[in-house]
Structure formats: C-alpha cells, structure tokens
Length: 407
Image (tube, rainbow, N blue to C red; front, side, top):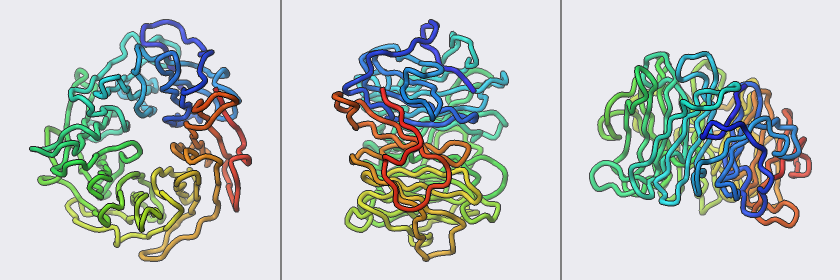
C-alpha cells in the first residue's frame, strides 16, 4: 500500500467540508493491495484525493489524504504506480486541473509514511490542453523502469491539428525528464481522453506498448515500444477505425479476454448506432503496423452511451464491465471469434445518469462505480462511490452495492 500526503509536506488531514459540488468519485483507481484511490475535485479545499478501503462508509475513514495546492488544482485522473524511481516503494500520480485548463500532473514518489518532499509536478504548456486527463504507469521506453504516461487530449497535435491530443511519456532515470511524445494529425481527435489510455504488449514481443483512443476521430492507435522522441500516427504504430461519429475509442482497456496468452483490446463506442452504444473486442496479438476496423472484433451492443467507460474485472478469464448512461453491464470471457455478440451475465442500474461515470476494478474481482453528480443528503453533486463484490449475476440496482462511500 501507499499513503498520500499534502504537497507542502504536512501530515495528512481528513477533510470535513466535502459536500455540495465536491464530485466525489470523479476519478477512481485501486492499488495493488486493494485500497481505493478516489478524488473529489470540487471540494472547498481545492480538491482532495483519498486512500480508503472499499468497505468504508465515508471518506472520513480515509487512511490518508492528499490536498491540492491551490484552487482548481485537481481535476484529472489518478493512477497507482508500482515503483518508478526504483526505491522499492509504490507511488501514485495525480492529474491536475488548474483554472486555465492547461492541466498537469503531480508524481508522489515517497509513499509509505514519508511526506512527499520529492514530489514532481508537471504543468501543461498549452492553454486548455488538459494535461493529466488520463494517466498510466508502465515501462514503455524499454529500460525496465516504470514510466509515467500522461495525456493532454485537447492539446494541438501535428501541424495544424487543433485539439488532436498529445500523449507524453516521462521517465525518472537518470533524472526526471520527458522521454517521448506521440500525437495525431486529426483535428479534434481528443487523443488520450479519460479512460482511453491502456498499456499492453501489442505483438507479444515482451516490450511494453500503448493503446490510445481518439474518440473525436473514431480511432484507436497502437503505439509500439520502446517509445522515444517525437512521432505521430503517420510514421509509426497500428490504427483501428470505427464508424463515423461513433466515438470509437472513448474508452480503451487491455486484457487476455480469450485466454490465448496474448493481450486483447476492448474499445468503447458510446455513440455507435444512433447513440445506442457498443463495445468492440479486438483479439491479439496484433501486427504493430496494422490498419483495421471495428468490424474485425466481437461487438456487444448496450444501452444508451454504452462503452463510455470500461473496466477489466480480475476474474479468470477476465470479465469486462461496460459503463453506459446510468448502467453497468458485465460480460464474461472467453469471447468467441467475431462477429458473435456476447450476452451480459449481470446488469447494474443506477438512479442517476452519472452512475458509472467512472469505474475501477479491485484486485479480487470486485468493482467500484463512481456517481460524481449524485446528491448526498441535501448536498447536490456531492458524489457517491459504490463498491460491488465479485460474482455479480442477474439484474441488480445500485442499492445492491456491498459498500457505499459518501462525503
């Protein structure tokens, strides 16, 4: 496990005034020990991130709290890191918002009881670029060390590609620095939007790669490692495209869904079929230079907006949680070859449309579901996070949650 602390080096405090507008559950992740990392970017304390057990009833029970340094400083993703600096201690990276929209990220390398005097902050260089909207920790530079992968989905890309999106890779050794930059040539592509950044091994060569969604252009890109320097979709990598205006690539996750020993991709397309939504499963291994389409995968049609968020459940074989507007469908692998559709083994419905706006799978087969716009008591948009134990079956509602965390 790791702990989160305030960036000024003070001891962690428990927030007491997270209420209306806090949006608890705006970003979720589980660490390797099964503790939940959850953000509340709209709190009156400029935004907080807490580490809490999934069975807790309130973030007042948080094991640790990180408080943003200033107004608007929290608003991106959150991700656990195994050990980027090689000191044997797990870490975390937190996405920042900032009132300018430039965004940024803060890497907290000194968990496990030490105030983060060595915390590293990366600020976005482009107004409204949104750096930190999606985060991942993985070795994509081929040096056997964990890299920090940070997206800026609204940053300008190659040439005149306004809001094409950019993915930046930072590495700690020999000193913290930018190691690689990837972008596309498609304006308004929104490369690397929240939930659309997935480390994997594309071709089974043992080198870490990335899959990145660009829902504004209905694309998913496979970016082969080792990554270095600046490059774009024209000079490296694979590309899968979906139907126009389907938002193919809004969510991207990787797992061995067909139990053949190779990573596969699940891709959300929430506006597919007149906004009915769908998820497409593409079966690996992949040619790192392939040009393919969504028609090559297993497609699961869902409810309105299905595929806006995805999470891989830690089952054998892996199951897939498919988020839509106020609903989660659970589909269980192994998945048959295309084009067979897959029936859901469970469906969980919420009372608000923001139910399943965020999701995170724990290491034991369970699922946390964020509902950041939900009211808590008399406080509108306070946010709620519900946790469901492993083994979900049948038709359920948010009231069937095994635990609920409120402000």
